[in-house]
Length: 409
Ligand SMILES: [Zn+2]
Image (cartoon, rainbow, N blue to C red; front, side):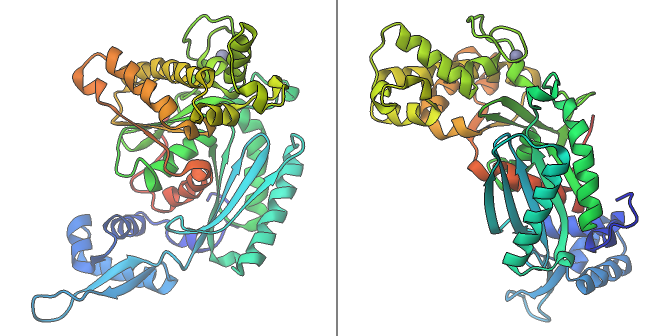
């Protein structure tokens, strides 16, 4: 927003009072002008003026309620959520997911593009820009109807780039992407690490609605967490907060990509699950997985293990249960450190549902310090594969209705 060239409805609503009123309307669903004044402590004329501006811009609409106890029916205000749109982009190591949604994160168009190779930032920009133009065409929506572009990007950088793989390295690649996209589309672009975007997405639209202290854990190739503490996204001093993949769990002999032994990611990330499965098979355990991989057991993956577990395969069930127990230890540590109200499990592993959720809950039940801690809610992501892309949309909405949330370090 520092760039004066950025135009559009976003800029128009940057006054604090405007955001405050917009957010009040959003959180109530529908509300009258006089109730907005009461709630925000703004004077009725100020509310009327700002609401008139919002009506003119098409961001809110009037709605007449049917219920009134005599006299005039009150006119309520609602967010005109289908009048403006957001681009959400989820950049993972192998694919990019794109969504166009309205201001309620209702998806109008969704698309996944597989990448054959790791891209340089300029190629990544070109590819994304091209897709956004194509999608605008397909959805028949003009650029001026968009309020922003949100991007969730995986926190680890390809080893070829020579980086250590920790989240702060991400900045080197993302800063040009953000700048280039802002220049091209003249829209604000919000970029966040994928799991933090997911945490905001779950908090706005998924399994964490209304929760002030929330931890979102994503388990796929890597393992990370996004923290919302006191309704604010937490980054830590250098943006390293949430690197739970490198929490020490057990000295198992499995080496982590960070060079240490026994990190959570080395045990429950997709490579870790595969490695533990191969180790057990090499010890002579019987399993349907050999048949399911046509004897090429090195091709085993989480999906096959889950399917085998559903069919009652003991080794597959054992692997998932062990995975749940490792996660349970990590989650118990998180509960003791942050005492969250709810923990949400997302990423590919969440598809294993109760095969992992039950052992996680058992570990927490056995080991947590207090009765309340034992009862910490641990749930699966509601947004599933779209959690990060919806989270990316929520990053833009978060900025737009920026009363409730701001990032803290
Ligand atoms: Zn590690």
